[in-house]
Length: 216
Image 1 (tube, rainbow, N blue to C red):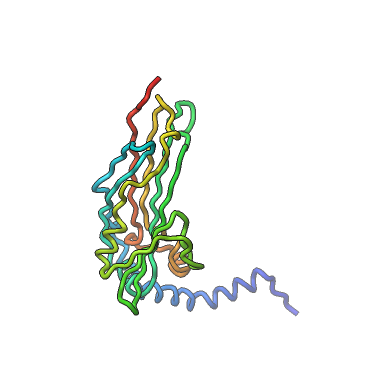
Image 2 (cartoon, rainbow, N blue to C red):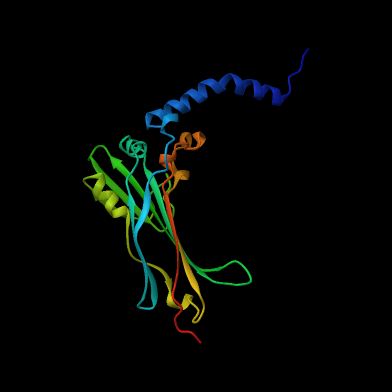
């Protein structure tokens, strides 16, 4: 009697199942606009406005991101797949002898979804990740068009990112800012596919130094 090792058994099963699984994943990808031909230039996203201001004992950030959703992303939204964006900012203090020290950090999580029954767009914003289990504590806005929803999503106005007490007088500080589409929140088949097309890679960053104030 011939014995087959567990490893050989699973390898054999995977080889038999792999074609149908890959076909399923490709079909899921094609359903929302994924195709090898779609692997073109990265999606355009840029900061058209970015400034920091110290007021009322705190540091505020305002920014505007120019963002035009690529066709595959918009097609996924229309098909009912929510898309998540993350904005985060860190206040860093310079250290000549080591990496800059993070003294404050904030994040904003945004979930954009289309509601076919009402034909409206819903944008949820929270300081915590928004997962499939529920929206948690979030600020909800409704829009009649995708353009209106994107207008709200791409504008950041007077976002408090640190308290004045976080900034040491006379020290040099800088702010790291990141805006990105969070591919980790996409359905599992997309993650298995690696979300290959560059149209799904939407990100923009900025690092800006603060002027030194209150020197000793």
